Structures are given as C-alpha cells and as structure tokens.
Amino acid sequence: MEVIGISGWSGNGKTTLLAKLIPELIDRGYSVSTLKHAHHRFDIDHPGKDSHRHRKAGAKEVMISSKTRWALMHENTDDEEASIDELIAHMAPVDFLLIEGFKKENFPKIEICRNDTDNEPLYKNDSSVVAVATDREDITTDLPILNLNNTAEIADFIISRSAFGGQ
Image (cartoon, rainbow, N blue to C red):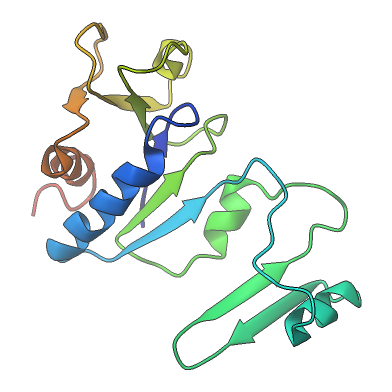
C-alpha cells in the first residue's frame, strides 16, 4: 500500500484536492482509500441510535454494518490519540492510501500552499514534505513544484514515486 499525505494549513484546499485526486486515480485503475485527521472531537453516531447507546454504555468498539457499508467506532478511553501507524494497520489494503492532515507525523506528504494564505510553508521545516502543490509563483525550493490546479499532474507525481511508477 502506497501512503502519501496531502498536508497544509487549514483552509488551503486539502479536501478539495483529495475530492479531485480520488476519482483521478480510480479512473486510472487504482484502488484508493483515505484517512482524515480531525483536530477536534467528532462524532459519526447520533443520540438515540442503538450504536450510540452501545457506545455510551461503555463498549470499547462498536461496529455498524449494512448492505452498503460498515463502520467501526473505537473509543479512546485513555485519551491517547492513535498513532498514524496504528490507524493505517486498521485499513484494508489498497493501491493508494491518501492521508489528509497529520502534518506533524513523519510520512511522505505533498504540501498545499495557496496564494491567499500568509502562513509559513511547512516544507521549510518538515523533511517529510516531498513536493509542493501551489498556485503561487513565489515558491522557491528544491522540491518538485506541482500546479495545484492540475489534478492530473499531481496524480502523475504520486504514481511516479510509487511502486506503480514503472508500469
């Protein structure tokens, strides 16, 4: 499984890019999954539902299944956030696992740098950034610079640095 992150400051378009990259890679014949980091408490369960009642009653994990999907909820009762490696271990094998966020973790990332932000680019202090996808013209780095508005170019880069690159 090839792992690559889409990283950058909040509001730079990570989700927008992923929503374009996923079908681009699938259209090229690859299987794709995603892993998204949330900086806040989130809930995919709703009060009053059976699964919510199971969780609130103290179940460590609750799995919900139907004909069309299943979801596993795991409670971090010790308030320790799972490591990226622990989370990846729970994922079914695919060709590409695209990770959104987790900018402090050490795995290959493409950083998004947009014109309309004044945040210091992460690539300047993060050696795990392998390329910069940008719409800015003032970026100077030895890293590959990708056109943020060219999804095919970004997909080409992802494939070229993977085990599939020679195919």
